[in-house]
Picture 1: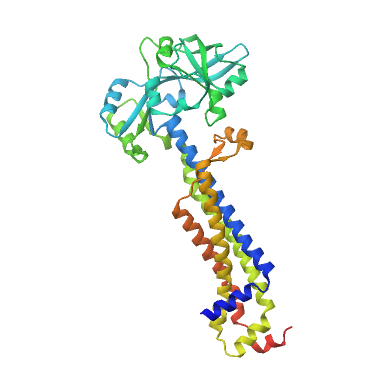
Picture 2: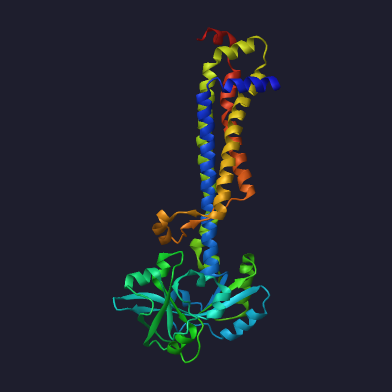
Length: 406
């Protein structure tokens, strides 16, 4: 075996330029693929965590028709009984009541359609991280009456500034148009420009004074101790209470659920592309080396080297090339991802387009140890399989015919 290793090693470096190019190709291909998978994983995990922690939460409760219709009269009946039940459920980490309706915002510049979100400040802080999206001014706990916070994108479109007054118009519970003057106290920026253009936040108590004689709740957003509890929790809520509909975050945001499911598919596709490219590279390199050494292989067979040892020698050459490139490529990828896992990868140059799609401009790549091992193992296996054909060609060499070749 030691002799075969020595021969294989020397054969590889007969043409150092060609072997070096092949090793570099494996290094670059594996590094690029692993980093790409890590970035994709990071983007998907960040997007999912942000949406759950900042906006959607693990589960929500509404009137059955509210999400499709959006009318203020479609509020949650007997929400007090539901919140009392939530207080007793050990699965519930926290929850917040929201008063919602569609309406219009009128500034000195123009009028736009929006969704008005009345929130309980303390409960919202305890349940979501949306308050961390504030970029300027104050959150709704400002002392200013009828406070409103708007998205940066909406503020820019309306040329609004902190301290400006806007008029919010909406239908009250009796289907009558109602308007109220609100004071802008701050701007927020979420991960989605579209969300920032379409939503404003006010205090629930200020909003309810205009909406209905009695406090209304259109949405109860619930954070659970673990995301895996969502399905069972929703089933329990729906079976316990009538006139409402509880849904998990996957049901509320099918596109977000699809992102999670596509994460594994993307990794398979990217890895497959790497494997195919590397397999053809190894196949091409080994076939070139084989045709150049036909006379030598014929001579080795004619002086007594078994065809099995010839096969093993060619496979060893492929293994040395593959392992050399794979180990270096994976090492560089691990160092790369380890650095950016903490520091974050700034894609500010693409921030505008990323924000339109709901992605943050700072990406934290994520790749588990099992994923590293899986990618490395599959790449090594496939490239070695690609070497089987050249090895078979080598053992089929006819010594007599090979001796006649130049």
